[in-house]
Length: 388
Image (cartoon, rainbow, N blue to C red):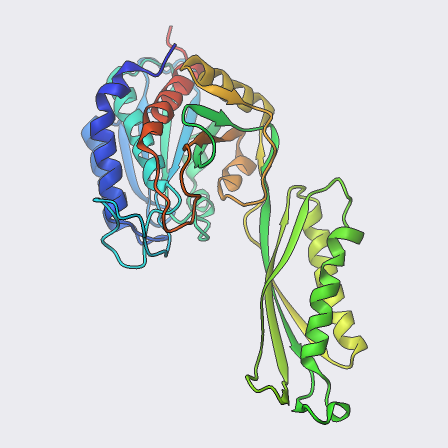
């Protein structure tokens, strides 16, 4: 079976929605226009329930099938927020908001889920309840967790949850995913090293904070190579390093560094944190300095349920998509992980073709992927909750 014919008919309309969102990007939780447009369209489609303000600015739509005897509730999720990046695409519908753009394709995700919602509200060819999740603040704001904290799963008695993300470099019409860990956790740390400032010509009268901090940076990178199981994927990166002096002849009082730790094994997060603290504090102490470690937990590991992956792959193949359901996991993080901690489900990557990569100022979602994403969503619902 190819993509559903209805989505070929709806493509100009869905594309127009996407272009409008692209032209008017909104960031994090500040989504009055985007969330308002989503809620307005869901009501126009005839959804049985539309609720705004879940997770501050999230929107939930509910469509009940022709029958509800199965008692099953399946959720589909799209993220709505843009990024604080200045767009450099030159598109006719490029962002009109300086310093903001849909550089990760969330406009495409939202448009595809709206397209699927319109079709499924028309046909209702399923037995059960479809819950449509339009989420704010995926880009660093943990919008998924905010929606969960507002009772998302229990309020609508969700049994399974699915989502997709576009993937530049994968051909349009293809989907990739895998069972188990798909995307890494992402925790952040800041290390503040305090020594004793002084004149560069008299290092013996100071505690050289820059030297101490540099030694900490080097030693931190032994954690992955010497403390982590070689078969467990962990990435540690120190991304910033600065002192409180800009003079070449001054030994500064303090130095600061910031970095991230990413893990595919949830069990490695605690070990990584403990070793970062120990390396920083003990290395500083050995040189007569002090180190303070500020650890900020981020998104958990995104862990796909194997049965849900198989069901999603079957639906994708049924609409003519090429599927790789044994893809390699990747180290970027995703807050869909919070949903998968609460309910079984799957997260998948939808081919975006040969485009600029996400978070790049020249990136743009590929409209040719829209019929595939819409068809996949609709087929998944109809297969998981078949009508009699």
